[in-house]
Structures are given as structure tokens and as C-alpha cells.
Length: 326
Image (cartoon, rainbow, N blue to C red):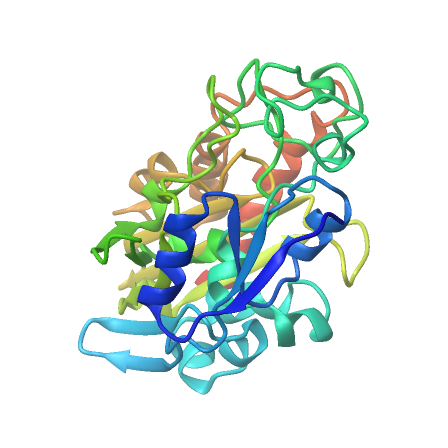
């Protein structure tokens, strides 16, 4: 780990101002991802700005839905009665992530910004376009069992590893951001993450020094009837091989609205809007679910070791839809 300066920010203005003055700084909340990357020398910030004193807390019901402060801890949100009852996919995604110890430390904002688990990215002895643009992507011809099959490019096939973002994208979540210039903006989470294209080092639309202050999730019938299903190599403390977040509003035997997203198959959390459109107006049958699942992985480009994800993603999605349809 490199040497770095440290300061505690008493306000958003102080935090963003410190970042504006030092472009190599990094914000510290739970630190469960950042400190790991610092120990590996993948990131080497010149300064850590502790933002744990900032007032970005609260899990509240608003006229429009659910509001979660970015500094809330994962476990607190996952176990919150409002989240459990009205947004079960969000609760399940949080409680299936990591260990209880990590969930008690990790913040919501930090979790949404976690970096890929690609071994080549995390090992500085290898080249990596995401870490050093133009250096190459050894995963393409190397070990790629856990890598992406959707949204890849010739520059990068690293998978987005998180759980929470998959559930939030399925339920139309919106991020609230505050910039170093004191300006606030809202960004649909669907538009926040970027595919690698020719610039794999740019993973989100977050601007330098910008802070996530909250995330909101609209209230909806499909949010109340939602599910997050995670398939992994072992039953605990493992990242997903494939995951699915779904929500259905079924009335009179007909699907009125549907939400579908896949995790650990894309270079970003993968919303399957074509699959949603296919389901609306149809009966919640296995045949229709399988047709939607086929659309969800359309355009997949599997690598040598991860072709199994195409079928696994479809089966996971069908199972999730069946469970939520009841």
C-alpha cells in the first residue's frame, strides 16, 4: 500500500472541495473494496477523504417510493422491514452479498461503485486495459470462466460482480449525485453504468469528485412482487456465476408489468427490456418465461471457458420468474 494523506470531511462541500484540489484523492466510506485495491496496488490514491460523517443516511418511504441514503450500511437496508416487504428483491440482493461482517461495514454508495473481480485487473503483474488503457486484455485468451458474455468488447470482458445494482436496475432505481461544484443531479441507474467499448477504464458516468448521496426506487406492484436469485459455486461468501432480478405484476392471469435484469453475465448490470416487453400481456407460463429468457441473452458472446453461462442465465431467469409468479 502506498503512502497517503487522510482527512475527515465534516460536510459535502468540504469533501468535494478536497477532491477538487487533489484529483488523485479517493472517498472512504466502508472501505471494503477500496482498501483491498490499495493493498494490491491496483489503485494508489494520494489522499483518503473520510465521508462517514456526512448526513447521507435514512431508509424512508416517500410519496414516490423508497429512499435510501448512500451512507446506509448494506445489512441495515437488507433487514429493514419496509425494504423486506415492499422491495424484496433489494433485500435479497443485499443479504446474499458477502459476509455479515462485510455487510455491516459496506455502504450502499460504495457497493454500487465496486470494481470487477477479474483476476487480471487485480494482479498488477498482468496487463489490463481497465487498469492501464492500451496495455491489453489477457482474459480474452486466458482464464475467463467468470467473465462476461454480454456487453463485451475487444478491449475488455470483465464482469460487473455486484448483487444490489442488479436488483435496483430491475426496479428502475435512480441515483442522486452531488458534484464538486455544488450541483445536484439525478441519473437512472440503468444509464449510470457503461459498457467498456474502447474505453474500459471508464465504468460509470460519475464525474470526478462527485458523491452519491442517495438512491430512490419507485413504488410499484412489480417491486412488491420481486425476487433476486443468485447462483454461485458455494452457498455462502461467493460472487455469483449468474444472478437474476425479476418483478411481476400479474392480474387476472395476465402479466401487466414485468422487470428483468441479469447479473454476473454482463460488463455492467444487465437490464433485459426486450424480455420484459415480451412478457407483458401474456400468461405467466413456463413457455413464455423461456421465450423471455432466450431474448434476455440474445447477442451473447461467450468465451472459451464461460459458454455455460448462456444456458445457466436462462435457467436462472426462468426459475426466478416461476418463483415470483407463485
